[in-house]
Length: 479
Ligand code: GLN
Image (cartoon, rainbow, N blue to C red; front, side, top):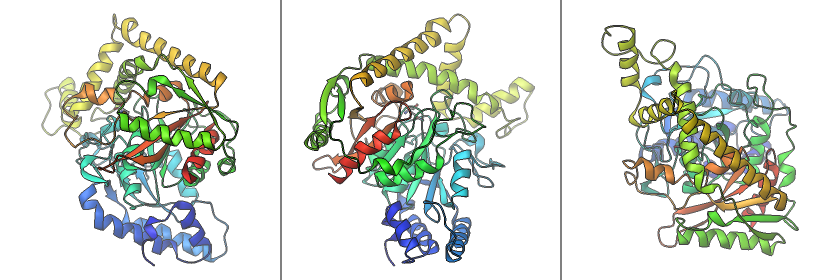
């Protein structure tokens, strides 16, 4: 059977259940796509061929024995190399962790494993998830499957490219300020940034702890719903996961949008956003109106401060989180003999971290230092509260909010990497939902005329209303 690797998760599951093919065949199809295409794309930092086939055989045996298995059983997944995978290197794309083999699975991975996971490999990212292009990786850049001269986005660039290039059926990524949504948009796939606390962060290397989320990337809205249903929910090991019931996400898929109020923030369609991006998104939104939704212009006035607040708060948290990588507790030892303990730290961290990480650690320690804390960190926290208020106010009037994810489609490799400020500014439309901790679903809705570069929009809902995002997303998908 050919092209099994191109199936959606739901199609793959149906095929497995109807015994049209086995999980081993499905897995082999993904593995051969990886060996054919990943030399060019570089989405994977590690391919776990042997264990994947073993896992697939295990699922085939259990299904053959008539066992009722989870919706994800036997379906090949690729996991961002920021999530711990027991016995499989987890590098965070950083030299300091290049040989790190975690002794346990991240909670999200462990839930997938219990569901009959077949993991084909670990995917590339910006070092410690810091970036928007997967260019800050010690494994080299991940290329966009739609145009190999362009970036796949970041930081979950490997996960998005792996799904887009049919090298897995779905993938797991993380989103702190846009890292699932933006690469999903650049690569033309679906991706869900969940409510803060919806998916356990346990076993995922922390970037900015009060912002980090874990979520799926896939080829359909239904696929996203199925993965979310497995990984979401309370976990004792992450105290920020509340005891909020996990609904049957697939029940939201065919509800339609009749009578729904959709907010279009004027700040998301204004200056700085390319005209063609706006046009493609407005066309998609008009389709929702045709299906009975009401479009409401709204304002999220604090949007313009989001980047500034994030790039103070995030480095502050990052610098604290990365303290543990000192070459003693975690991380590689220095390559030459240190003079004393301080020199040991300097050498281990100097050799182990890339430039972007060093830049952020410096900003983070600066904004947290005595005398600057109030002026920077505390002020950024206050701005964050204002952003939350923006969203709360908007949700009094509308059910969901829709806007672009990125002001422009995928850019050329090397185009922004030496201009950190320009790279940071490009996160302007993804950071607000992260600041407010609300869910946001990335949906591919069109492509640039000529270049064919994909464009995605995001559907944001109130906290823990992921279902509402999926409801609107599924209407767009069938339109
Ligand atoms: N692009 C953002 C940054 O560089 C977001 C990263 C993320 O969400 N992990 O920090």
